[in-house]
Length: 208
Image (cartoon, rainbow, N blue to C red; front, side, top):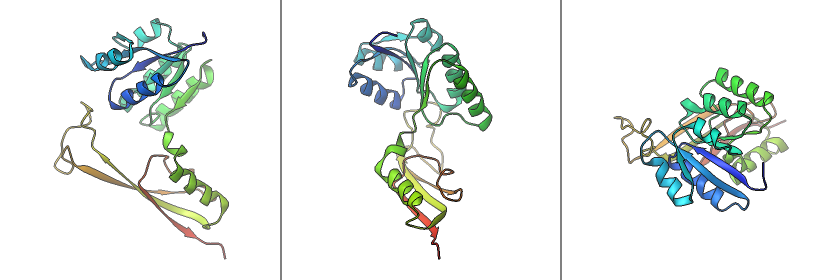
């Protein structure tokens, strides 16, 4: 690897554009190429950032990029991540890591055997709301947290060809709120998925 870190972007949807802007603003990092099976999508990002357009993951690997950034739908995360790791590349994979525990175990096994690094884009855990929730639980200030519920409010993925189709319950263009309740392990919030949330409401049993 030279002094410049080169990145190959696999997938050219909305979040891939966010990643591309971040690379542009990061000294010493260059977006080298973009791949997406949908005609025109890779070109939109590549033209804006001076990158090449290639057909698939294997073309990205053939270019010799240092990092493969996987921004595909989750159904493709496991195989793409494993292939890139086995090719000796560093991998940044969007959340979730995979769809199933079995797939996740395959990915982790590949990462342990590979020379490159694997990072999952669980960025919400660095947000001030999540850090505060974690710190409060860890400090014991609010007692033993036995349950935590939160909700995420966001627009539906109209930018996603495969996952954005309208349904009677969730028509495209409206917002949806997805409540989530997760049990926690004693003494921590390790069982709560670290996704962005608009509100969190702990139910705590205070120590007596």
